[in-house]
Length: 367
Ligand SMILES: NC(=O)C1=CN([C@@H]2O[C@H](COP(=O)(O)OP(=O)(O)OC[C@H]3O[C@@H](n4cnc5c(N)ncnc54)[C@H](O)[C@@H]3O)[C@@H](O)[C@H]2O)C=CC1
Ligand SMILES: O=C(O)C(=O)Cc1ccc(O)cc1
Image 1: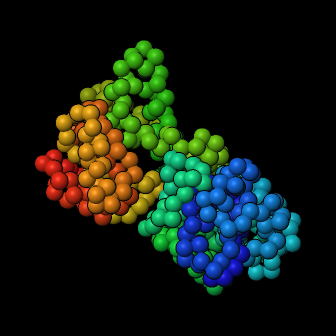
Image 2: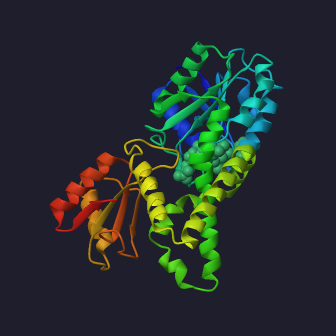
Image 3: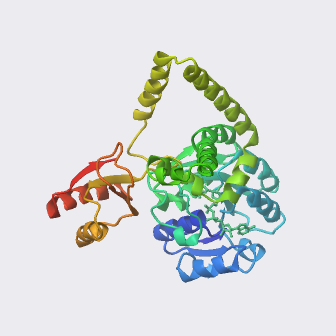
C-alpha cells in the first residue's frame, strides 16, 4: 500500500510494527515521533523509520494511518490530542496497548468527530523495551486482537488488516471487555505473580544469601517477565483495575485452598490439584505464540569446562543458526545437561540439535 504511516512511540512494539509495515509495503513512508529525542534519532539511524516528525501535530496531519504505541496512560492523552487536530478525512487510527476497555472508551472522542479508531493488541513482545529491541518477526504467528466499535465498517477493518499483514500475526476480533478479562488472566496476572515471587525470594535472601544462587534455574525462567518495564506494567494494572481486583481475589481464594490442603496434609487432594493443572498445561498449544512468548530451548549435556560455550556456538555458527540466548545452568536438577540455548523458532532448534549431534558426542534434550 502506498501511504503515510505515522508511528507515535518508537519502542519495542512501535519499532517492530514499523519494520513489518515497511517489509510488506515498501512504497509507504514511515515517519515517527517519540517523546525521547534520543530514541527518535536512534529509530532513524537504525532505519526503522524513514522520517522524523518534530511533533505529534506535524506528523498526524498528513498521515493515512496513525499507530499509537506508547504506554497506555499516554495513549489516552494522545487520543485526546488527536481529536483536536485537523486530520485527513479517511485517516485510520489504531493503538497497540495491553488493555482495551479504557482506550476504546476514550476513542469515543475520535468517533464523535467521524475519525476511525480501531483498538489493537499484538499479543507478543518481550521483557525488553526500546527501539533497539524491535524485530520484524516479533509478531509472527502471534495473536493480534482488534476491538473495533460496532459502527466501524468491515471494509475499514480490512484496510487496517492489509496495513498490518506483514506482522504475519493471527488476527481476531473481540470486545474490549472480553479482551481485558483474557489478557488479565493470561498476561497481567502472571506478571503480578512473577514480581511477587521475586520479592518473596528477595526477602528471604536478607537472611539466607544462598537463595539468590539457588534461584538461578527454574526460578529464573518462570520469573523472567518480572524484568519487564515497571512503568509499562504500572499503567497496565491501573487501566485493568476492575478485572484485576476480581482475578486477584479469586487467586487469593485459590491460594487459601492450597494452603489449607497443605496444612491438613490432604495428600490426595494436593495430588489432584497438581494433576489437573498438569493436564490443562500439557494440553496448551505448543506451536503457537501466546502473550508470553515461548522460547525454543535446547539443553546440551556438556562437561562444565571453560570454553564450552564457544565450542558449541562455533558449531552453530558454521551452519548459520542464530541463537537468542545461551546460559550455563547452575543446577543439574530436573534437566539433562547444563548448557541451555534458546532459539527463535522450532525449525532453528531442530537444526541446532542435528548440528550438535553431527559435530560432537554431546547429548541434547528439548526443554
Ligand atoms: N512490551 C511488550 O511486550 C508489549 C507491549 N505492548 C504495549 O505496547 C505499548 C508500548 O510498549 P513497548 O513498545 O514495549 O514500550 P517501550 O518502552 O519499548 O516503548 C514506548 C515508547 O513510547 C515513548 N513514549 C512514551 N510516552 C510518549 C508520548 N507521550 N509521546 C510519544 N512517545 C512516547 C517512549 O519514549 C518509548 O520509546 C504499551 O502500551 C504496551 O502496553 C503490547 C504488546 C506487547
Ligand atoms: O514476555 C513478556 O515479557 C511478555 O509478557 C510480553 C507481553 C507483554 C505485554 C503484552 O501486552 C503482551 C505480551
